[in-house]
Length: 292
Image (cartoon, rainbow, N blue to C red; front, side, top):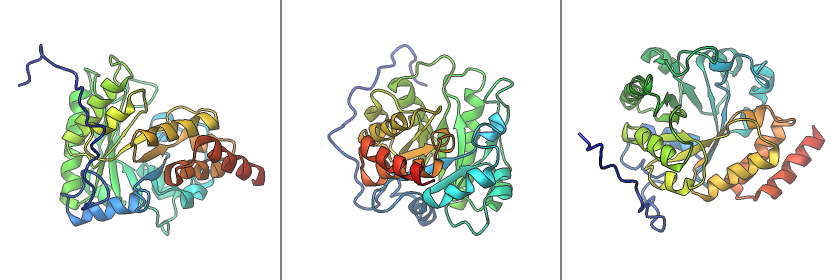
């Protein structure tokens, strides 16, 4: 057992020593089997090594929040411009055409809503998750919440067992613990816990010092978009994360709550895949908004 009175913060992240990706283009995935590599290659662009994931799983917590009132009208038309779609089983079945060929990251934990205590989640049944033919499965861990930390990490570990059984990557989604500072120390801890428990992808939040979060996490890290920001600020968020080594974004509200969602997802893709600066990507957004 770790000696709890002598926990020392990491201070040597080897920022000048990039991970070896000579055998497979995504870090930390080379020792996995063919199925996981193949599914990861569907999610992450082979040329850039990055992904633009479109998250619309908010409904299981928030209901028909702004921009998700009609997923068939607001999300399905954006699928062509995303690398991967992240949603819940009900919305996927009801609103995403089965002829869609974009990979699906299935939200596989469910539980409470914003009206009650959060994070008391359970996993979907194994066979139900497999029926959706996901390219990846996602579940949340609540590091720092004494009431739910152990159960959410146990849920996640169980999901990794299922994923390894069927060669399906698992994405760990880091919730923000009530008693934890929203800083790189916390997100490094939470992201590393996901990876240590078998995550192939980690979704977390951008913060100052994010290069350390990426460096200490031995698998690809994507950032959550979080609450709706002005378009230029959302593009700056994506740009800063990419500069720190993030492998992409998993954005929801900053896309589907934009005044021009189609233009916004294309602008985000410009930052992620084409290394555009925020001002350059904003030009794509403005041009697309004016056409719509």
